[in-house]
Image (cartoon, rainbow, N blue to C red; front, side, top):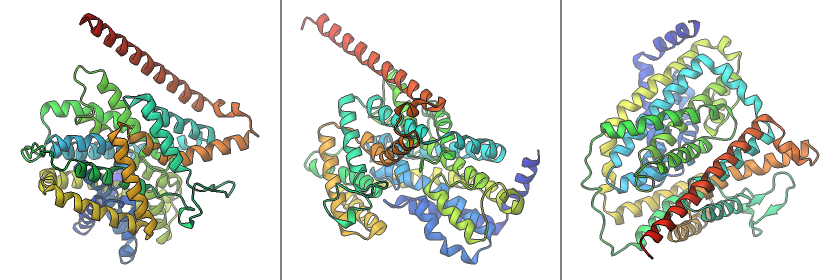
Length: 508
């Protein structure tokens, strides 16, 4: 009851005209920045840090809460409409979201994303209010071996389970791992695959890879289709900002499953929401494959609902880990840690005693900000969807310009512009030959983490490989992965046997 009383005091603080104004401003700015390729909620918070010097701490952090969740939804808008996610956390939801947009259901995809953001964020906020210290204790369970097991689980799950061909999935994974090792080895200091170029010593930025594989690949694909009649179903799409009863029934379990997947990852410092969003995507794809009429690849609403809910749930519990332990588990949380220090505050257990007014106002602003975002964005989903009515040659030219500007703004390197073009051509070739993009992206994101944790685990155990599976968490992850792979193999063998039986029945 003490938590409810303090949360009520936080709502009293937030629900004043001036503080509500900061919530709305934060939500609008976060959404606007998130729509731009290469930027996102972390960049929005970083850009707004100097602006908040003149604000009191409560007003500043209330606005940051709006920016955080607004940026996450903005990331998804550009991903769903133009296959250009504003940040890497929106990649998984963009796969089916853009397929829905191409089939004339852009408004429904945006509505599913907005509701997923609300559901995942609200449930995470409730857990943070009541269970932040208990949830944060889970972070102490993970060591190098556990992080490695988690990365391997993600690699194999994405490559062998959510793709149609295991060989092609593993090929994409190998490409991603090759890109991930470019740069200076953090342990030995050796330069790897840099060609002697100093600009590559820091590796290839994830923004360059994301924009190249998704945005420019789509641009090249559309350019290659010149002369082919366009599908005008997008222009005829009904502009309803709500979901039908059937769509809501299909999305509701995915929202809840995605939220359950994302909640633990906010307190595990794996660097962001990429892992839970791809795991949620994989879960929904496996479940969809069992249905009589699979929709994945043609615009499955579950493929939007699950990853988007997972991403927002992770962002919410990441704030709980920051407040309760002072542990930044994502880029946005790290920037908010700097914002706390800007005001002379140190997140952690003592923050609840030293600045209770700020903490509980911030937690209350999570609820208020999510309601404001849902209220603002759900009715505007058809308006966002009208971006697809822009003639293709203007639309994709604009995407190219903004993508290049976003890449250049993050590093100011001419080489990055060359790399994004080359990666875009690679993505176009992968698309032509049916090699999936998702395994390559997850390898680029988690490859450095897997390598670092593997070497740490072996260093601690003095080279004993048994240490990699010696903990209950790591052993459980590997055991679960083995069961999943066996299930996929059995399903593949059965489907091939049925196919041969069908051919035999036709007399061929």
